[in-house]
Image (cartoon, rainbow, N blue to C red; front, side, top):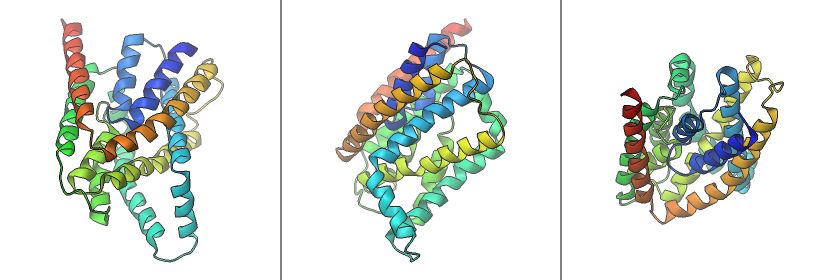
Length: 266
Protein backbone atom coordinates (compact mmCIF):
# COMPACT_ATOMS: atom_id res chain seq x y z
CA UNK A 1 0.00 0.00 0.00
CA UNK A 2 1.34 3.41 -1.00
CA UNK A 3 1.42 6.63 1.01
CA UNK A 4 -1.27 8.30 -1.13
CA UNK A 5 -3.60 5.34 -0.66
CA UNK A 6 -2.98 5.47 3.09
CA UNK A 7 -3.77 9.18 3.19
CA UNK A 8 -7.00 8.64 1.26
CA UNK A 9 -8.07 5.81 3.57
CA UNK A 10 -7.05 7.96 6.56
CA UNK A 11 -9.27 10.79 5.34
CA UNK A 12 -12.14 8.33 4.91
CA UNK A 13 -11.56 7.01 8.45
CA UNK A 14 -11.42 10.52 9.91
CA UNK A 15 -14.71 11.47 8.28
CA UNK A 16 -16.66 8.27 8.71
CA UNK A 17 -15.59 7.49 12.30
CA UNK A 18 -17.59 10.50 13.48
CA UNK A 19 -20.13 10.96 10.72
CA UNK A 20 -22.76 8.21 11.05
CA UNK A 21 -21.98 6.36 7.83
CA UNK A 22 -19.73 3.49 9.07
CA UNK A 23 -15.97 3.96 9.01
CA UNK A 24 -15.30 0.20 8.81
CA UNK A 25 -17.75 -0.19 5.94
CA UNK A 26 -16.20 2.64 3.95
CA UNK A 27 -12.68 1.38 4.61
CA UNK A 28 -13.66 -2.06 3.31
CA UNK A 29 -15.25 -0.47 0.24
CA UNK A 30 -12.21 1.75 -0.34
CA UNK A 31 -9.87 -1.24 -0.06
CA UNK A 32 -11.97 -3.06 -2.65
CA UNK A 33 -11.96 -0.04 -4.99
CA UNK A 34 -8.25 0.71 -4.54
CA UNK A 35 -7.38 -3.00 -4.58
CA UNK A 36 -4.91 -2.54 -1.72
CA UNK A 37 -2.67 -5.48 -0.97
CA UNK A 38 -2.46 -4.98 2.81
CA UNK A 39 -3.46 -8.24 4.46
CA UNK A 40 -3.19 -10.30 7.63
CA UNK A 41 -1.46 -8.67 10.59
CA UNK A 42 -0.64 -5.58 8.53
CA UNK A 43 -4.35 -5.16 7.83
CA UNK A 44 -5.11 -5.40 11.56
CA UNK A 45 -2.35 -2.96 12.43
CA UNK A 46 -3.38 -0.36 9.85
CA UNK A 47 -6.98 -0.51 11.08
CA UNK A 48 -5.83 -0.03 14.67
CA UNK A 49 -3.55 2.86 13.68
CA UNK A 50 -6.44 4.67 12.02
CA UNK A 51 -8.74 4.10 14.99
CA UNK A 52 -6.01 5.32 17.34
CA UNK A 53 -5.84 8.53 15.31
CA UNK A 54 -9.57 9.18 15.61
CA UNK A 55 -9.49 8.25 19.30
CA UNK A 56 -6.85 10.93 19.77
CA UNK A 57 -9.08 13.35 17.85
CA UNK A 58 -11.88 12.60 20.32
CA UNK A 59 -9.59 13.24 23.28
CA UNK A 60 -8.53 16.60 21.84
CA UNK A 61 -12.12 17.72 21.12
CA UNK A 62 -13.42 16.60 24.53
CA UNK A 63 -10.25 17.45 26.48
CA UNK A 64 -12.08 19.75 28.92
CA UNK A 65 -14.79 17.16 29.64
CA UNK A 66 -12.22 14.38 30.05
CA UNK A 67 -10.13 16.51 32.43
CA UNK A 68 -13.27 17.27 34.44
CA UNK A 69 -14.09 13.55 34.62
CA UNK A 70 -10.64 12.71 35.99
CA UNK A 71 -10.87 15.51 38.55
CA UNK A 72 -14.22 14.14 39.70
CA UNK A 73 -12.90 10.58 39.91
CA UNK A 74 -10.08 11.56 42.25
CA UNK A 75 -12.54 13.15 44.65
CA UNK A 76 -13.61 9.57 45.49
CA UNK A 77 -17.27 10.50 45.89
CA UNK A 78 -20.44 9.45 44.05
CA UNK A 79 -20.48 12.65 41.99
CA UNK A 80 -21.65 13.31 38.43
CA UNK A 81 -18.24 12.57 36.96
CA UNK A 82 -17.96 9.23 38.80
CA UNK A 83 -21.46 8.20 37.70
CA UNK A 84 -20.66 9.14 34.10
CA UNK A 85 -17.48 7.04 34.22
CA UNK A 86 -19.42 4.05 35.56
CA UNK A 87 -21.89 4.34 32.68
CA UNK A 88 -19.02 4.50 30.17
CA UNK A 89 -17.49 1.34 31.68
CA UNK A 90 -20.85 -0.47 31.62
CA UNK A 91 -21.37 0.47 27.96
CA UNK A 92 -18.02 -1.11 27.07
CA UNK A 93 -18.86 -4.64 28.22
CA UNK A 94 -21.09 -5.81 25.33
CA UNK A 95 -18.58 -4.85 22.62
CA UNK A 96 -15.65 -6.20 24.66
CA UNK A 97 -17.39 -9.55 25.21
CA UNK A 98 -18.39 -9.88 21.55
CA UNK A 99 -14.90 -8.90 20.41
CA UNK A 100 -13.26 -11.55 22.58
CA UNK A 101 -15.73 -14.41 22.13
CA UNK A 102 -16.28 -13.99 18.39
CA UNK A 103 -12.85 -12.68 17.37
CA UNK A 104 -12.25 -15.12 14.49
CA UNK A 105 -15.76 -14.68 13.09
CA UNK A 106 -15.38 -10.88 13.23
CA UNK A 107 -12.02 -10.99 11.42
CA UNK A 108 -13.70 -12.88 8.58
CA UNK A 109 -16.09 -9.98 8.03
CA UNK A 110 -13.19 -7.69 7.10
CA UNK A 111 -12.16 -9.45 3.91
CA UNK A 112 -13.87 -7.30 1.30
CA UNK A 113 -17.44 -8.55 1.89
CA UNK A 114 -19.09 -5.83 -0.20
CA UNK A 115 -22.56 -7.41 -0.05
CA UNK A 116 -22.49 -7.48 3.76
CA UNK A 117 -21.32 -3.87 3.91
CA UNK A 118 -24.14 -2.81 1.60
CA UNK A 119 -26.83 -4.57 3.64
CA UNK A 120 -25.50 -3.16 6.92
CA UNK A 121 -25.41 0.35 5.46
CA UNK A 122 -29.12 0.02 4.68
CA UNK A 123 -29.74 -0.90 8.33
CA UNK A 124 -27.66 2.08 9.46
CA UNK A 125 -29.70 4.33 7.19
CA UNK A 126 -32.95 3.03 8.69
CA UNK A 127 -31.76 3.67 12.27
CA UNK A 128 -30.67 7.21 11.41
CA UNK A 129 -33.95 7.96 9.64
CA UNK A 130 -35.99 6.81 12.63
CA UNK A 131 -33.75 8.69 15.08
CA UNK A 132 -34.16 11.89 13.10
CA UNK A 133 -37.92 11.66 13.66
CA UNK A 134 -37.61 11.09 17.42
CA UNK A 135 -39.33 13.56 19.74
CA UNK A 136 -38.99 14.37 23.45
CA UNK A 137 -35.24 13.89 23.56
CA UNK A 138 -34.54 15.42 26.98
CA UNK A 139 -33.37 12.48 29.12
CA UNK A 140 -29.91 11.85 30.54
CA UNK A 141 -28.02 8.58 30.03
CA UNK A 142 -28.96 6.12 32.80
CA UNK A 143 -27.58 2.71 33.71
CA UNK A 144 -30.16 0.80 31.65
CA UNK A 145 -29.66 3.15 28.71
CA UNK A 146 -25.88 2.70 28.88
CA UNK A 147 -26.35 -1.09 28.62
CA UNK A 148 -28.64 -0.76 25.59
CA UNK A 149 -26.28 1.72 23.93
CA UNK A 150 -23.42 -0.69 24.65
CA UNK A 151 -25.29 -3.48 22.87
CA UNK A 152 -25.77 -1.22 19.83
CA UNK A 153 -22.02 -0.54 19.86
CA UNK A 154 -21.37 -4.30 19.90
CA UNK A 155 -23.60 -4.74 16.84
CA UNK A 156 -21.64 -1.95 15.13
CA UNK A 157 -18.59 -4.24 15.02
CA UNK A 158 -20.08 -5.42 11.72
CA UNK A 159 -18.67 -3.45 8.75
CA UNK A 160 -21.40 -1.19 7.43
CA UNK A 161 -23.09 -0.59 10.78
CA UNK A 162 -21.98 2.87 11.84
CA UNK A 163 -20.78 2.89 15.44
CA UNK A 164 -21.62 6.55 15.96
CA UNK A 165 -24.86 6.14 13.99
CA UNK A 166 -25.91 3.08 16.00
CA UNK A 167 -25.04 4.54 19.41
CA UNK A 168 -26.33 8.07 18.77
CA UNK A 169 -29.40 6.75 16.97
CA UNK A 170 -30.18 4.31 19.79
CA UNK A 171 -29.66 7.04 22.38
CA UNK A 172 -31.99 9.46 20.64
CA UNK A 173 -34.63 6.74 20.14
CA UNK A 174 -34.42 6.13 23.90
CA UNK A 175 -35.26 9.80 24.44
CA UNK A 176 -31.79 10.97 25.45
CA UNK A 177 -30.78 14.57 24.80
CA UNK A 178 -29.05 14.79 21.41
CA UNK A 179 -25.96 16.65 22.62
CA UNK A 180 -25.50 14.24 25.53
CA UNK A 181 -26.01 11.32 23.15
CA UNK A 182 -23.21 12.54 20.86
CA UNK A 183 -20.86 13.16 23.80
CA UNK A 184 -21.52 9.71 25.29
CA UNK A 185 -21.15 8.01 21.90
CA UNK A 186 -17.77 9.54 21.13
CA UNK A 187 -16.30 9.07 24.61
CA UNK A 188 -17.47 5.47 25.13
CA UNK A 189 -15.32 4.11 22.31
CA UNK A 190 -11.99 5.64 23.40
CA UNK A 191 -11.25 3.11 26.20
CA UNK A 192 -12.17 0.23 23.87
CA UNK A 193 -9.75 1.39 21.18
CA UNK A 194 -6.83 1.77 23.57
CA UNK A 195 -7.75 -1.52 25.23
CA UNK A 196 -7.69 -3.23 21.84
CA UNK A 197 -4.29 -1.70 21.08
CA UNK A 198 -2.90 -2.83 24.42
CA UNK A 199 -4.11 -6.40 23.81
CA UNK A 200 -2.52 -6.50 20.36
CA UNK A 201 0.77 -5.25 21.78
CA UNK A 202 0.71 -7.87 24.54
CA UNK A 203 -0.12 -10.57 21.98
CA UNK A 204 2.81 -9.45 19.85
CA UNK A 205 0.62 -8.66 16.85
CA UNK A 206 1.75 -5.06 16.42
CA UNK A 207 5.14 -4.52 14.84
CA UNK A 208 6.57 -1.26 13.53
CA UNK A 209 9.11 -3.00 11.32
CA UNK A 210 6.71 -3.18 8.41
CA UNK A 211 7.69 -1.78 5.01
CA UNK A 212 4.48 0.25 5.18
CA UNK A 213 5.59 2.32 8.21
CA UNK A 214 5.51 5.61 6.25
CA UNK A 215 2.07 4.76 4.92
CA UNK A 216 0.92 4.10 8.50
CA UNK A 217 2.22 7.50 9.64
CA UNK A 218 0.58 9.28 6.70
CA UNK A 219 -2.73 7.51 7.31
CA UNK A 220 -2.58 8.33 11.04
CA UNK A 221 -2.00 12.04 10.45
CA UNK A 222 -4.73 12.25 7.82
CA UNK A 223 -7.25 10.47 10.05
CA UNK A 224 -6.32 12.62 13.07
CA UNK A 225 -6.63 16.01 11.33
CA UNK A 226 -9.82 15.14 9.46
CA UNK A 227 -11.20 13.51 12.62
CA UNK A 228 -10.83 16.77 14.55
CA UNK A 229 -12.93 18.59 11.97
CA UNK A 230 -15.50 15.80 11.57
CA UNK A 231 -16.05 15.34 15.31
CA UNK A 232 -16.73 19.05 15.83
CA UNK A 233 -19.01 19.13 12.79
CA UNK A 234 -20.95 16.06 13.87
CA UNK A 235 -21.73 17.51 17.30
CA UNK A 236 -23.24 20.55 15.62
CA UNK A 237 -25.25 18.40 13.18
CA UNK A 238 -26.71 16.22 15.94
CA UNK A 239 -27.84 19.32 17.83
CA UNK A 240 -29.67 20.52 14.72
CA UNK A 241 -31.33 17.12 14.16
CA UNK A 242 -29.98 16.52 10.66
CA UNK A 243 -29.41 12.78 10.78
CA UNK A 244 -31.84 12.07 7.94
CA UNK A 245 -29.36 13.36 5.35
CA UNK A 246 -26.86 10.74 6.45
CA UNK A 247 -29.58 8.09 6.27
CA UNK A 248 -30.16 9.00 2.61
CA UNK A 249 -26.42 8.74 1.98
CA UNK A 250 -26.28 5.29 3.61
CA UNK A 251 -29.24 4.12 1.52
CA UNK A 252 -27.51 5.26 -1.69
CA UNK A 253 -24.05 3.86 -0.92
CA UNK A 254 -25.52 0.64 0.48
CA UNK A 255 -27.59 0.09 -2.64
CA UNK A 256 -24.59 0.75 -4.89
CA UNK A 257 -22.47 -1.69 -2.87
CA UNK A 258 -25.13 -4.40 -3.15
CA UNK A 259 -25.45 -3.95 -6.92
CA UNK A 260 -21.66 -3.98 -7.22
CA UNK A 261 -21.46 -7.23 -5.25
CA UNK A 262 -24.16 -8.79 -7.43
CA UNK A 263 -22.31 -7.69 -10.58
CA UNK A 264 -19.10 -9.36 -9.37
CA UNK A 265 -21.00 -12.59 -8.81
CA UNK A 266 -22.22 -12.70 -12.40
